[in-house]
Length: 247
Image (tube, rainbow, N blue to C red; front, side, top):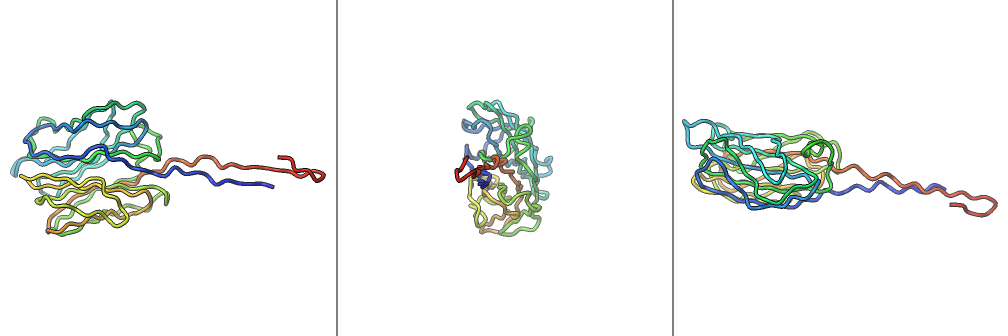
């Protein structure tokens, strides 16, 4: 007699670390102190805004802090607007508590907002969370509307998760996450009006959707998160010999 126990998959879970916004004109911003967990995937989504045209396009930020290396996953400018959204990944065996510094390379911005969160139950291979990110898609809508959809390719597994971040240009208005998705953060700032929304789900969904009320342009980034490998199956074997069962 052979008995087989199915592999045990570690479900993906999420925890928010911090989110906030600043209208200060500055070339760097500092978040509240966070305490990332060892060997968890840290995702940071940042939106920033350069001075009005004809100034240069909005700078792509870099992040540092927590003894982690923050690696850019994708960045997207909103059409010819002055706003940009960027997503980063990080992971470490012994991260430290502390603030995250958002550096704009000496270029003064008119505002910045951020959402930083972490995942457990995902693939921990690679470096700085690289094994946990299967794919990413960055997009924008160039015609103002009240909804935006980012479409990912087919997932590698139905048990992989997803996360997304969106930026509203020209308005600071609450956004509504997609059905079946959980909102992580929804924060914004005025002068200029901007809004950032982050959301996630623990299983497969190739479309990340957000909606709002007042017609506006938007940009966003969505990712597929690879679930941790299953533990090995357990096989129990028993034999019967002359009426006695031997395990």
